[in-house]
Amino acid sequence: MYKKILLPIDLAHESSWSTAAPVASMLAKAGNGELHVLTVIPDLGLSIVGSYLPEGFEEKAVQDAEARLKSFLEAHAPAGVSVKGHVVRGTIYQEILHAADTLGCDLIVMASHRPELQDYLIGPNASQVVRHARQSVHIVRG
Ligand code: ADP
Image 1 (tube, rainbow, N blue to C red):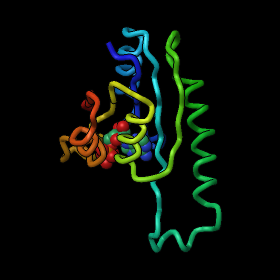
Image 2 (cartoon, protein in one colour; image 1 turned 120 degrees about the horizontal axis):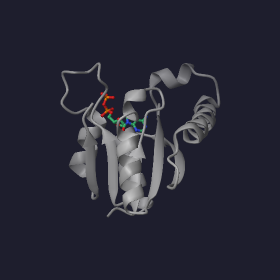
Image 3 (cartoon, rainbow, N blue to C red; image 1 turned 135 degrees about the vertical axis):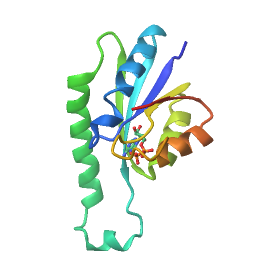
């Protein structure tokens, strides 16, 4: 069974966790493993948009996300499972792959795409993770 499970979630979209979180929790519980919940703040990098935002905008976004993830975990963390939250900044799929490696995860559980994007069988971040992850990936279809 899996000992360290990564659950990447987009806090702005309930569909990213509503079905995937129970699956990840159930697998963590079954293997007496840890659950790592990751939220990525997409990096604006050198984009032209970034130059119009106030100084410290991205740091503030990380702090807000940390507070929101903390509240999320207080409300949704499954009983009897060790749960840790992580907020990072960067390119979403790259940060998911990086976190899975650096945390030593053996499974990534994630939703396939937002329901409103029904044309996709799998979204852009989920497809990159499936393609490049060294770990097993459990894609939960919405
Ligand atoms: P869509 O564009 O339809 O949302 P994605 O591939 O981006 O498709 O989303 C699928 C999954 O990618 C989400 O359920 C979530 O697991 C992960 N994901 C998307 N955005 C983020 C984010 N900001 N932080 C962490 N994980 C994310």
